Image (cartoon, rainbow, N blue to C red):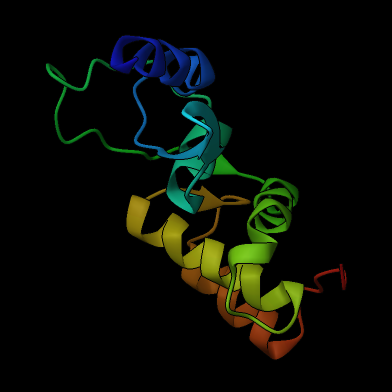
Length: 128
């Protein structure tokens, strides 16, 4: 029933309160199961550990937190299967681009600087 599906989605997304997440519904003989497909931006916002916001009231939130490079690599590992990149370093750079558009910093630097550091070989990313 639609009501039960709504409750299942709510249960599955409890720890993502106040964030946009994609939910995948798999229906097998009229029984719907809910699975989460977190986007890179929602994973980053979760890693920033910001207080829960009420999306209806609070608008244009500035995400000016700071992530460590290790957190970014963890997020990249979670997103690895959905990334278009050949190596993990490419996925890390995709996540850094998302960090840039969200507006948070990585290791205190702008994500753009970290990306160029990866390109120049100053920052090494583990293979997998």
